[in-house]
Structures are given as C-alpha cells and as structure tokens.
Length: 359
Ligand code: SF4
Image (cartoon, rainbow, N blue to C red; front, side, top):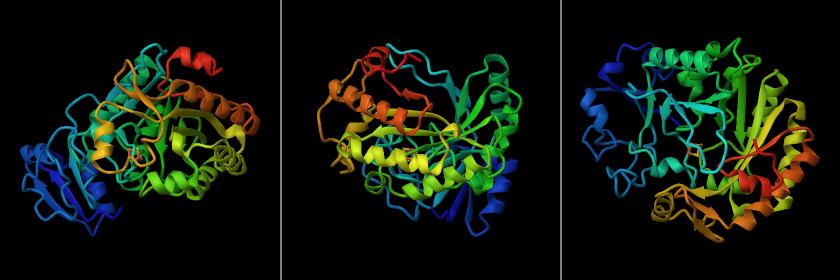
C-alpha cells in the first residue's frame, strides 16, 4: 500500500513516532486535525476526509458497518484506553496465556473474512503514537504477570507497515531477558528490517493457506512463496517462527492441498525452528456474517453448514471440524515432526474429540 497522506491529530504532532513516520514517508501530504476531528474520522464522512482517495463504503459511520480501510491514508493519534489486553477466553476452554498490544488499528490488507470489518468503527489505518505509555504498560505487564506471549497482531497485521512505524524494534528490548515472547503475526513478507534481530524473545508467526485461497481471499497480502521466503530468511538468522493455519476455510480445504502446503513449509524452514502450528476453522464473530454478505465476498466462505454457538460465533458443523483437525494434526506430526499443534478458539471437549492434548 502506498501511503499518500498522513493525518496528524494535534496531540500527536510532537511525538517521536510521528517524526519517524514523516521522515520515512517523505512524499506523503500532511494534514493536521484537531483532537475532536481525529475522534470523528470514520464516524461518518466528517468532511475532514473530503477528497480522500478511496470512496466511502455504504453504511459508513455506523458502528460495525462494512468499511474497507481507506487506501492511501493513515491517521496518527493517541490511544486513550489500555494498551495491553487479554484475549477473550472461549467458553469451556483454558486461557491461552497470551495478551495483545494495541499498537495500531486496521491494516492495509483486505482479507474477506477479517473480523475487524465488523469490529472497528474507524475505517482508517490508525497508528497510536503515545508509545511511551504503551512501552511502560508492556514492561509492567511483563514484570508482574509474565505472560507466555504478547502480540501486536490482534487489531492489525504486525508487520505490514512495521518498516515505517518501527514498532517491533521499539518493543523488542522490553522483552529481552524475560520469559515472555514478543509475537509478530503477519501475512506480509516485510521482514528485511528484522533480519538478524531475533534472539530468544522474538517469535514471528505467519498465517498460511494454499496459494489459491490466498489469492482469492487475502487481497494485498504477500503470496505463499513470498511468505515462505521471508520465514526462511528469519529462521536462518536464528529467529523462531510459527505457523497459523487459521482460518482454514472449509471450501478451500483439501487434505492434498494442506499436505502440499506443509511440505513447502518443511522445505523452507527446519522443524526445530518452528515454535508451533496453530489451527482454527473459519468462524464468524457476531455481525461479521452480515458484513461479509453486504460486501458480496462470501462466495466460498459461506459454503457448507454453519451453526450459531453459545459464544455468539457462527461455526462450521462440528463433526466436520473434528475431521479436518484430525487430518491436520496427523499431517503436522508426519511432515513437521516434533512441532506442537494447538487449536484456536475451540473448547477443551472438541480438543479431546479431535485428539489434541488439552493445553
Ligand atoms: S491481515 Fe489480518 S488484520 Fe489484516 S485484513 Fe487480513 S485478517 Fe484483517
């Protein structure tokens, strides 16, 4: 994504991260907005964005409306809430031991199934520049709670813009010498700036899927070969990597295509450098089904039978989930021996039925 315009909340104007982003995007137009203006961006077409380079989507301004990120513009502002948060625990499952860091909202990619479409009210990519408070919160949580992992990949792709924001390298020193991993989750190949920075506290996780699923469902992301190349580059330099087969989209799932995918991973990275494989089958958070349908993107996503679960999510037919998880578990143990497999967002009963150890 080419960033042509930077909107700067007046509160963020003098922050070091604002200066860094301006320096790294020398050709971008700069607009300063008031704090009130920054807060209203995305809440209807406020006029601040008149002439923006992407058309407003239908329903703009309504919470949860279907809003693609506005291509070409980013907003720099302050985050007012907590920077570190707990992942919601799936009813009936054990806590995952991971927390997430809110470094930015939204991302330049446009995955058809992305839950942010129904979650974030603000359509614009938003970078939070009050990083001193973010770092102090992260340090305090590491010191007092020592979570296993903390990720920046919950409300955005951790690396899509990281060469511009520098967030990963800002945070990494806080983790050195502790038992907590900084986990970067990505579908990009934007890792050149991280080569050689690994060590024991960095974990970079790639979401993978067969190439045809990536091309159809994940516009803007790196292709499979690029992701594997980036993973290989970091692993050869000593950085631990992980793989997320999540979401597995049932209509794109085939044992043959996932076997080939895992064989390609094995060809790119030694299994001893793979921290874990995490897998989860497509589910729809409340409101996402409707947003995807409104945007006309559910052609493959809606194939098969989905049912509403007790946590409000729409999930694929349970016996089929179990079948797919069993196949994936068997393939991982054959092709990537010794690499642990985890299920995401499933309860302990399903884990047992699928033959996975309770975490
Ligand atoms: S990379 Fe992640 S955050 Fe970005 S659009 Fe895809 S699913 Fe959403």
